[in-house]
Image 1 (tube, one colour):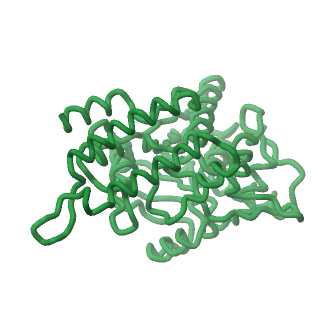
Image 2 (cartoon, rainbow, N blue to C red):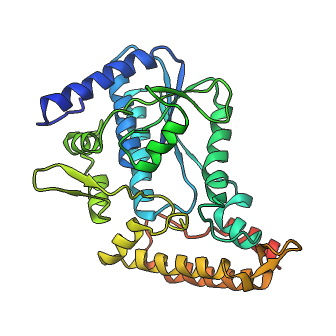
Length: 341
């Protein structure tokens, strides 16, 4: 039995009320897909779903699907993969109808193939090509293949100001909404009204279905200074996210910067290489000038130099890697070589 240890009565009531609501919702669907990123909100959502179906006569098939862009921050990537592996092992041991799935972009549409092979500049807020290619399209394809199903997400009003604005644009008022781009795909948001303190305090107090704590995930947030504990025991999170280490849409990658400042050599190397990519691909002298005087793709000669630096960088940081994490895969290297040479 998962335990909620020594927390306030109010939070305990919210926890069990959310599980009670989930039991009712899950019993109405033959299949649900839990969208899992590895962060605190999606981890709590996955936990709540598992708790809702334990020891209950609910025959709903549960798929916990993680979107792996193939340029995820390796620390969260490791934590996420371990979590999914534990779920698989636990559900198989106890006979639950739960499976996990890691959804990735294909080899010819990865970040490196698009940047170096096709010559796209590093993403920015006006040209966020990475989000669509690496996350939206692969996951949309996976969900479409598994329809009909209910989709569960850990989206919250209190998550960040940007998320709050996006939810208002989509006219989300309660716990139900629709999945953009897939007709008739319904989405349920079990923790939409939870605060960040609710989430962090609950994760701190919980044990996993297999009897361990969420200390690895918790420690990661604290190490990156994404969240920190205040004197009164509450948590303050700065809105930073564990996304792609190559992310250049944000003005400052606080998470990667904090990890680097806290002595993580891998984070420092990644940060330096990302800055090189931004400077090189956004330099107009390195771009092809089009007839309308706008600048298009990065020149092939420049992309070849970037490719060589990427291979060197990948080799240099191998000593910091873990769990078979790769900066770039052999298949991607082969695709890029065919496009450049």
